[in-house]
Amino acid sequence: VFANSPELANMRELTLQQMATAMIALERGPLSLGQLAGFLGVSAASASAMVDRLIEKDVLTRLHSEQDRRKIEIRILPEAARHLQAVQQAMRTAMDDLTRKLGPRTTHQWFDVMSKIAVAMDALESDGEERYA
Image 1 (cartoon, rainbow, N blue to C red):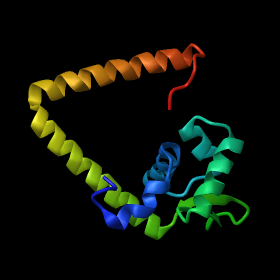
Image 2 (image 1 turned 90 degrees about the vertical axis):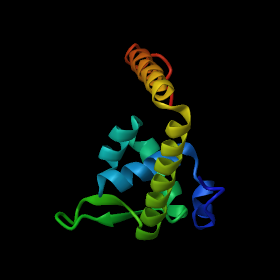
Image 3 (image 1 turned 180 degrees about the vertical axis):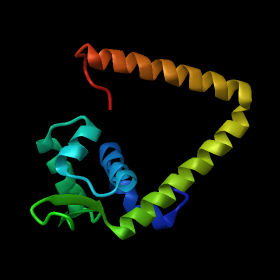
């Protein structure tokens, strides 16, 4: 996705976890630190450290809530939002191309396997096994 899009070059520097965090901020809108930590499945301290790194990379910002000035909200910066939306579109296009090349039967089998993997990983996580992210 990034190799074919020079305008997305700055997104190459994000780790998968940072990209996931940024996508959550993009999709969910302004979030409290606790909400973000819940979506990520990490502690508030870990989420705060991730937010700090993404602030340094000009992806996120912390602002006072417009409804309650005592609360801090985590928001995606407009330029980063535009880049992430372009990443999402490029990924959708790549997925469409891939599924067309695979054909409907193989695509269906692939989704069945991915669904079974997701169920197995959820079961491992609920049993206290190592978390896969």
